[in-house]
Length: 361
Figure 1: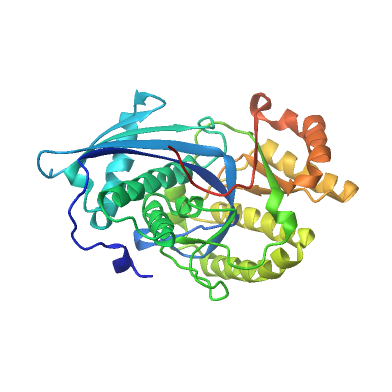
Figure 2: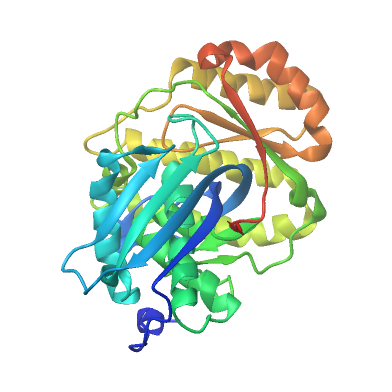
């Protein structure tokens, strides 16, 4: 599909008021998206596990204005309280999607949102937040006109979410999501994410994610700044080649359930992401001593026990431990005995692979 396919012809709004509500999860990338072109187009394709419990719940209560406004009319509440500092991001997002959602300036919106996870907890709240908001807006659109087909509904929600936060495109569905054009992935697009279309071995259907909270503080560099570092990065093209190659290799890995190779690719992707930050101009070091200590202990544990425990990192110090559900008991013992000491106040979150957004009554 092309961008023009998400633009609707003029239609009469069928309701004066209504309410919609959705819950959308965050996700954790296995193949990392780092670097983008204009209008939130990824410089390389990416692949992620959709999470289950780390989610944003958003509702929109809408009411038609007496006449179309020349600005966006909305109130925004986070955890029941006004959140003025979010308005700049929301204004920017609504301006980006206005041509695809022509009803926006004809209604006043009361947006209420909350997260199931704490702030600065190693979970990408922008992904779950913009995914939940986009699902609400598409649900609102479906109430104002004839409801679109389900595949179009999800594609357009992912398309809109991408314009708020690139990784949000991958939080609409699950359990394994692909975003960005890749010649070996049928149906892949830079405009929206798709459910991974290739064979997935049963071992990946119950994958677990334990997030170890090494550092709850604000990151030294925002994701937006990090993506910008790739524009003139000396290693950018090789990094993009690496991501495409890893996606191609993962087809066989997911088909055969090859956990050893899966872990190698996943950990290499995480370290490559941080290598790009450490070798850019300006350069950043986001890992902390406890991050490195956890990684070394994970490697030693895996070598000693053969348990298929691997790690990945986002653009920060916190560590995601990923492993099959059948290994949960021994991994939890290892975390409790060896890794909790490296967590800020013992903080950690327990999650697993999930199915994506959920419409709430």
